[in-house]
Amino acid sequence: MKTCFKNINLIDGTGKEVLKNSYIIVEDGMIKEIGTEYSNNFEQFQVVDLEGKYVMPGLIDCHMHISFPPVADMVSAVKLTHTIDHVVRAIKNLEALLKSGVTYIRGTGSIDYIDTKLKKHVINGTIKGPGMHCAGKLITMTGGHGYYLGKEADGIDGIRKAVRDELKEGVDLIKIVSTGGITTPGVDVNAYQLNVDELKAAVEEAHKAGKKICTHSHGTQGTKNSIIAGIDCIEHATILDDEAIEMAVKAGTYFVPTISAMYSIVKNGEEKGIPKYVVDKAKEVIEKQNIGLRKAYEAGVKIAMGTDSGTPFNIQGENSASELELMTRYGMNPMDVIVSATKTASELIGIDNEYGTLEIGKHADFLVLSENPLENIKTIQKLESVYQNGVLVD
Ligand SMILES: [Zn+2]
Figure (cartoon, rainbow, N blue to C red):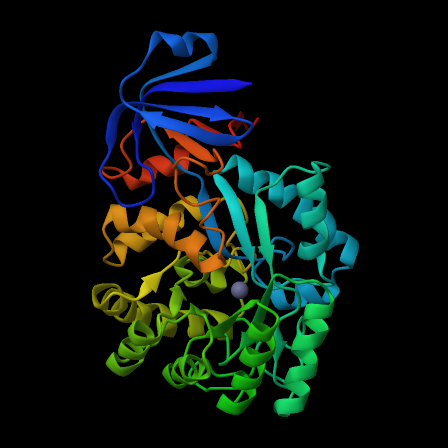
């Protein structure tokens, strides 16, 4: 079955300018042809006329916790919830994410390998959801950030064992922790946690198995340690100096800023029940990120879009499109923001042969928009429709 989508203004995700009055032919979920010379021969296919609409690739959210409760006191909620609650929430969230225009996610830490196990059901079609590339439990030092939901490990041998355990569970990605975090009580976002030799051991184990490794890092020293260790991607990367930025550019390290996480905490505050220590840390970090992200972007660090949905008031399926708006507020231009949520995100995950841009030979995962997102980035938050493998998501 072939479908021709015609009369579209195409933003293909590569950074190229809008291709006006174009068409896309999709067969078996894949893009077969793209052009501007519409032929009447195409009338033999199913034709979808998108007169005057804008089409761009589906969003790839590179930092996602599909099962976490995005409530004010998330730490207490995670401790109190049973695995079944996480599973039910995750299934609902996967569908909500897809409807909101997220056609691929990178899971950055879950409970009981829920993400890895649910991925099989999405592939089989038992449940609806975006494509998935997922870590299992995050690996943190004893008492380190996220210890209450991750796996505590210390020393080179301990870290090696923890990474090997994760790989044994069939994860796609290793997630480790380099600094304190906002939601964990009693840890400082500026303080580095695992040491360079421990991070290096984790990188070696992940890379040996052909897997990428990402790390949670706010403070500058933790980010530098991670880059020295050869970690592929820094999650948050909020507090930076010029040296850290230069190191990231040189090493080709990706940053996933997750502005939504800090923004949602500061916006809702203690009035909505978020613990004071969480609000205080988020305020400190968001101010510094406003400076650091601008500098990193201008210096040419590879930036991929991610929200950290699942943290307080950072609701899965509601914040991925608005993260793009936040990125423009932090100095990125709209085209670069779109590229970060599509092409760059697919390269970070390692799926750029099949996903991320609307080009021949790739999956027909795209969004239909009523306005030009390059002129109004908010239009992605009220999209007209989503197609996954060329099929309308309903
Ligand atoms: Zn996270």
